[in-house]
Image (cartoon, rainbow, N blue to C red):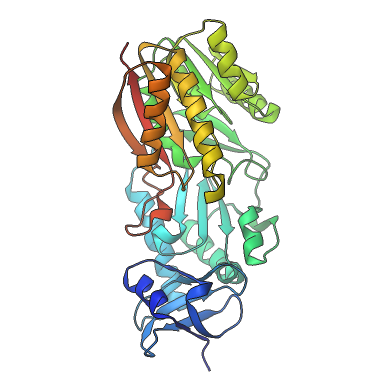
Length: 387
């Protein structure tokens, strides 16, 4: 007998509304095991589609298909091929980019990133994790990589009752993988680096920031120096700050790779360093703020709002009149309207008028699925200080 899950009216309404997630509280009857692909039915017994079922996560169902369509091997292969071909059509000026973006590619909880000839995957639910062997073979057939690495170390896997681990799935993956993004070279640590190695979702925002670069630049929360190295081609001097000594050592290494002698990497707490720079009378033509997610949960929002306001206030004070602030948040719980309000309050407290030059989001290889706000997590504002 096929695995089946029936829903409450509220759960069925979520599917009719186009959202692929069904929460545990919206399940009425479960006849399945964790990791199964299940037939989902509404309260009247009508088939709504097939989904991945988790017996641990609060997100109990992740929809795969709608109606009577089945998630066969051919279905999985077609979905993967569609995602890969879409990225190929974008003409991305980089050898590192996202191939599969989970729900936005109708492949929920599956992340696939490309770094040159290497593929890095993350399987973030029981159902996807169970199918990793067959998905690996499909990726080998579609992309022909020299190696495939599973970066299954995100803490979110604990919510699914899955082990956190990093393992080689296919071929060979070196300790460092050379890639090029917008003409800039990086040596990427795909085994231990943040996310799957680079913050690929900021690629187009780094390129956009460079259009406003001149004079002196400050890149705060710099990680491996992506914004700093991009700005270095337009600016006389760039200061890159990160609290991690490992990160700043990578910035220096990548600066040497690109002959960017005008990049200075500093290991420091960004909040403290912004204050010290202001006290010292330092001023910049462009400042970039790309912090980690301050609000990973709703409970963290008040503290996050305070943190975002503080760094934006300090950055605006450090800007010369006519200078640009590129301010980002990757906190899903801080939506665009809230982020604009935070920056506005920071500008009021700083006593400087600012205009919004651009509103941006994650790169095109990280698309947003309409009706699923969780897929729109990265917000980026390009602002100009008037006086």
